[in-house]
Length: 124
Image (cartoon, rainbow, N blue to C red; front, side):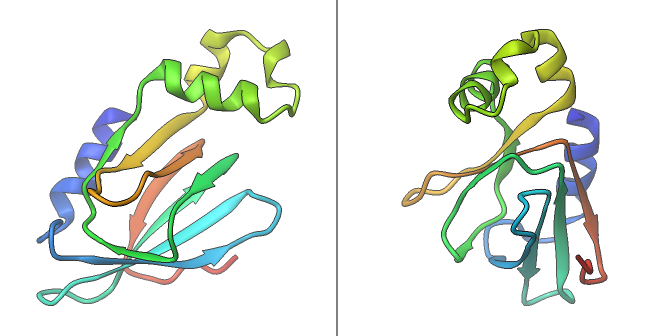
């Protein structure tokens, strides 16, 4: 998953000045789309699948994304009270990832199965 995230970050031309906008969210917590708007490129979209938890404002500046620790990921899953505590930690850390956005004013994170970058707005 780290290589996939690194590939996404390498394809973004200006991560510090991009604006992120929460665009699409399936109420069943399974899909999330974030539009990335930059001055030097057309709009891009970060899509998350298998979303279990999100914490973010509606919009923010900067796409400084990185993976949170496995311990943080498991801690959030256990707090969700969806039966995750019955599963092994090794299974959970193979299936779910905590994607965090570095921001000085907000704690922004998405706990999901996968992430991908596209130039087309995802349709949920």
